[in-house]
Image (cartoon, rainbow, N blue to C red):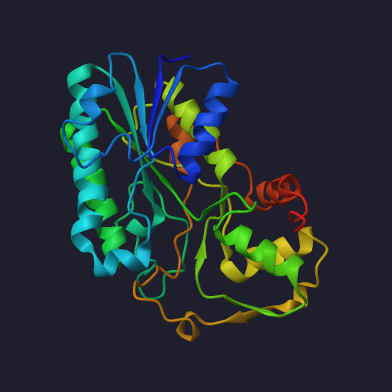
Length: 295
């Protein structure tokens, strides 16, 4: 087991769950919210990082649509921030793990070539400000600290009472009998936050030296298929979930139509593959339980 786990962006979903898992394992955890450690401030991280720490950067500008209107802020958080942390870790003699995204890929394949899960060394081609800044953040971190580790993940959810996709669909299934329109032409890797955090802790402890890894539940699904699965787990009528095209729900930022992440090369590097997405979803929905009763 490593020394301290220092988590930046600990106020978000991944940071919160990661801190909880690490503490349950008896680790020494320093969990820093964005207000406690502004990663865009080069001096801020220096105060918290010591030799033998492993810093896991869960901070990011993750509002994909908002990034289109505020590219400077997205760049500051997604590029300058990880570069600052990597430089601080390199100076202190600490390890550094940085979270990235499937949105670094375009989802476009050569004509006649079927879509297939993206390997870690496949050509990137982000479509949005968010994706471009996350890719630039990968390069910035590795340039500042070549032995940093970049962990790409996708479609993170908890499925409880939050605002993630699974949580929203769960409430829709339980709170009414209305139909729910869900896009069927975006396919990715739904990833249970608990499984992702277990992978991050394995990476923190391991001697894996691959600079870029994929950590997502295995297999691919459309948002429509994910929503159907949630309804099924809850015993709700899956016919209430209706497939629609993304053109019926236009958004400021384009999404890759296909961004399933392959675990093959990450497994070869030593990372335990995450379980199939459907198995993880079943556990997540069971753990969420019924909706809280209102007084």
